[in-house]
Length: 109
Ligand SMILES: [Zn+2]
Image (cartoon, rainbow, N blue to C red; front, side, top):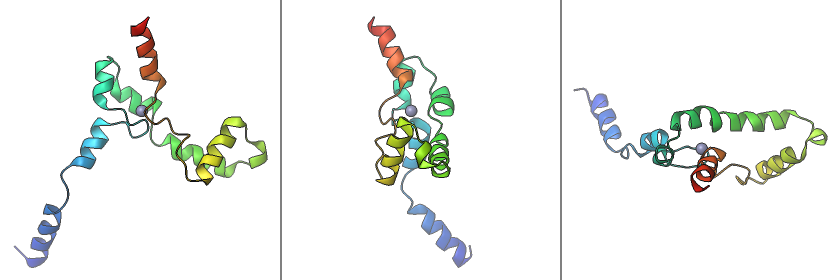
């Protein structure tokens, strides 16, 4: 084994366990709900992360706001823009999703 290859192998061995991969596979990165919550509610986790909380829609929305004249913002856009400018994530649906709320309402009625 060449010394550069040995060094590369050593670097890899210091990486933390696959916590990042586990998060990516088992947690919605938008609302932070665990995959197990969706499975318990008999809802599709894949549908949720692919359609409802598609992670790419959020930066695209900010890009849309950046390109829009601020004077043409509606109320929601003003709120999101002000959060974005202040570096706040309050506009993100952290721990919330209508997808699970609807299920909760169905089961509680
Ligand atoms: Zn989510």
